[in-house]
Amino acid sequence: MTMMKAAVFVEPNRIVLEDKTIPDVGPLDALIRITTTTICGTDVHILKGEYPVQRGLTIGHEPVGVIEKLGSAVAGYTEGQRVIAGAITPSGHSNACLCGCHSQDGAGTRHGFKPMGGWRFGNTIDGAQAEYLLVPDAMTNLAPIPDGLTDEQVLMCPDIMSTGFSGAESGTVKIGDTVAVFAQGPIGLCATAGAKLMGATTIIAVESVPARMEISRKMGADHVVDFTKGDVVEQIMALTDGRGVDVAIEALGRQETFEGALRILRPGGTLASLGVYSSDLVIPLGAFAAGLGDHKIVTTLCPGGKERMRRLMSVIASSRLDTRPLVTHRYKLEDIEEAYYLFANQRDGVLKVAITP
Image 1 (cartoon, rainbow, N blue to C red):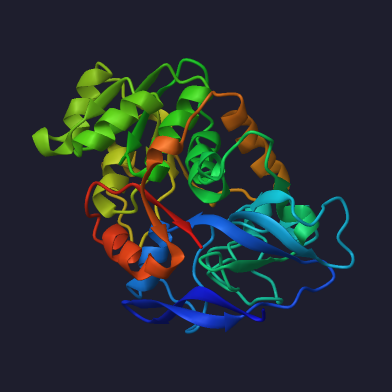
Image 2 (image 1 turned 180 degrees about the vertical axis):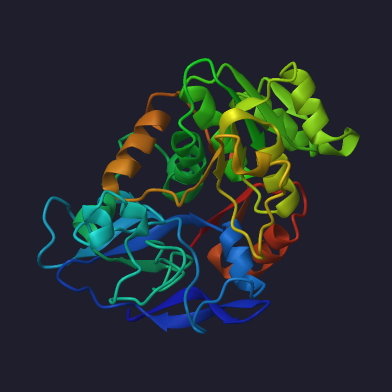
């Protein structure tokens, strides 16, 4: 067999299933047969033309699969082994990697500059919404799935869980902190869980959808603020007795949530930004304390690489977090256009869609 099915970007508002050639495997690569993948909010930005990619590119960056073929220089893995790869695929030897910033590997000459650093699958190279995926630098990026874990248990690790956790990590959440998480989509829910795992003792989630509010509490939220029932800043300041929060995590990518997160920080607090923004942001003078509030604003692209994936799967294997409730819908690859319609329009209470070839 030389051909496979793949979800391909054709033009804005058109991602369609097409036949593509199964890629050749280079010495450092691995070909994995996809067993489960999903659709990300960033894929919707691509669909709508808000984030530019090359026409004909296979979309998707959350792969779970089985090694089909290994490159001649790849050691330590076996064909038939169940693996995941992160959405971010560092080479391990770039300037960014050697500086300790693995997530930003990818802006070099090999693939040309892209603002999303080391995110290559479905961005600068063919992605995971297909029957097969070529994984570059396999020895840096392939992480074996522990025995006993299902595809859906580890499906959030490549991106959603890694991204959500990184908001809490880059925000340097500490034991006893008060943390607010703006929006409880899949990434926000994982940010809530990450803040709890890192020791936050008061977590305030911002959400209005009842089903997401309920899951948020299961993920670790102590309070859920409904932004449709009053001013969010006033509600959160009341919950903190006027002190504000130590860390605010913005997980939606909109001006109003970014600004709200900034306004609720205590002096010296940190805003950890996870959202993908499609227009310029404005920092209000008052919210920023005219630049004199000792505030920190940090942006984060989720870490990748096999060690990051191993750690995340260890969290799942230890039963400290169950991300399976985030998978609300399941589709076959041949129905992915329907799945995109559902996900892009947020129909039927969707959180995440599991796609199986």
